[in-house]
Length: 318
Ligand code: UT7
Image 1 (tube, rainbow, N blue to C red):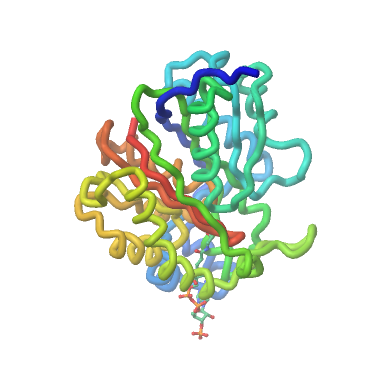
Image 2: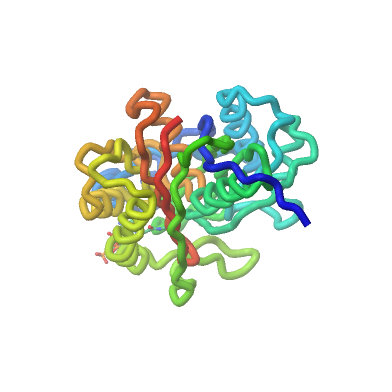
């Protein structure tokens, strides 16, 4: 038996993102439910979010983001051996999104699978892609986080409708002479699996907001710190911290506890809402686009959500 030579490391070559055109403001929501702009901004941090129309599918958004990342990487489609889509909001279980997206992008016969680790999904998929490249299972991997949460939200339930949104973010992962994607720290708390749930086929997402809030603000900063430690990176040397965009108060609480004084903190939630598995790659892709972070800087990623699941790693910004 033989195994292929492993690459010494993996890196992200490029990011891409896509947001649907439809903007929903807090005032728009206040017209149909008992909420208001002041409550949403002060409790969650969202000013507006993007929501896809009925004609735009999760696969459409994933294809847009994946196509942008692929174009920015400069790689031809035939050098992608594996496509992974992180999502928890497909409309149907079969087929998976990854094979459809790969086909639409002209990537012929790659490995293609979806990952469901909810809002932590992109960080799980990135770790899997990095391992596949380092282990010789794929030359390059297209990793996409894509969600159409709007189709799983009850638009009369103010506890979820004001939070969740749609979008997609993507990254191309390839080999590197030195590690540029650090070791993942991942885990789960299945004892809290009821905290964010879609009970049955014909029901909507509901969450015990305060349970998740407490868990996120008290148990995740050690995960973030461990991801730095395992990568041999001092948080003081981080140039960006990109946690899942769940709630601005959660983002700021974790950032304070991690203590990365020079890091730009992703606050994409303000205009993008909570897009679950799409939020981390979309936030970083938008920060790169706005020129807020420099190529070669180190970014700490941290995904967390339903399961409950979490995963984090340090990466070098392409
Ligand atoms: O991405 C997946 C991971 N999910 C998360 O990380 C979510 C974590 N949890 C949260 O972000 C927060 O718990 C929420 C944003 C979901 C809720 O914020 P909160 O500060 O925990 O509010 P609450 O549920 O304690 O509600 C406070 C008050 C209540 O009224 P009373 O009982 O104090 O009179 C609610 O009825 O705010 C009321 N309320 C609202 N008012 C206006 C709840 N939702 C709304 C609303 N608009 N949309």
